[in-house]
Image (cartoon, rainbow, N blue to C red; front, side, top):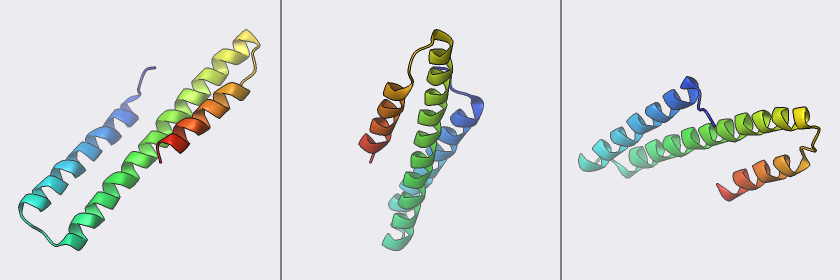
Length: 86
């Protein structure tokens, strides 16, 4: 699967957030602030994960429609990926 630049940019932003988180920990910032940053990183990852799965699902369904196949198994697989990620 090809990953579009918007997805790659999201991951780069997440990388920056993780680096900032590490800096906060090294500077011994307050627990509350560190947890807030961790939550932001997790939420950004969750949103990016959902975007990747949905784009992959969309692409697979389009390919299957060309082949005349059912997309039910693909939808189940996508749901399982999302559930597994939690």
